[in-house]
Length: 209
Image 1 (cartoon, rainbow, N blue to C red):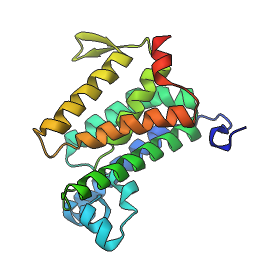
Image 2: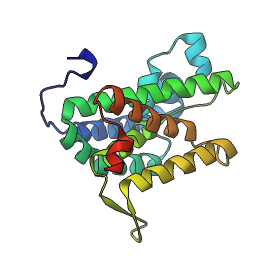
Image 3: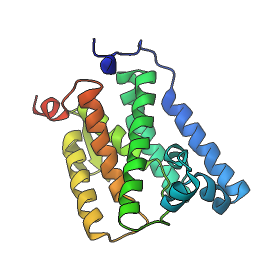
Image 4: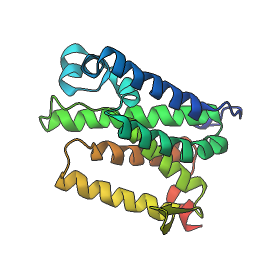
């Protein structure tokens, strides 16, 4: 068996709830110790990575959030979609998937920001990994219907493709520099590669079936 595809023994330990709990604790720490102090040490800032070799921020940026609405919507999406994806994958596989896609989305963002001269941009938030979870949900549950704003019904794959198109559009036009659209796209992209190389699943074939 290909060692890259060697599966974990299935277990379900509520990894999503642990991740949400850690994010909430870190958010409270931002309020107690001051957001600037936390961000300077644990957000992904290209200049800091290059000068101080703060490579740990490729992981820690995922657990920081800029305000209540930022953490609320990320954690809400992680709970709604991640819980079902975790039950499908198992907790160990889900945790690996979440961390790998989030870290690689951070590394990709660093490369793009550094090469384009955006040395002092501050990257934080779980959105890259959450977008990866959204793609995983669409692969495992292609017939699921999600209601946008509680009104517009869309099948999960259509929603993912729509979000991808929007993120690509916004990353090109750049209407809001505070939103890391490229990181969101990277979350989708690395999730797709994870399914191909780790799980042996082609998302496109899953949707066609």
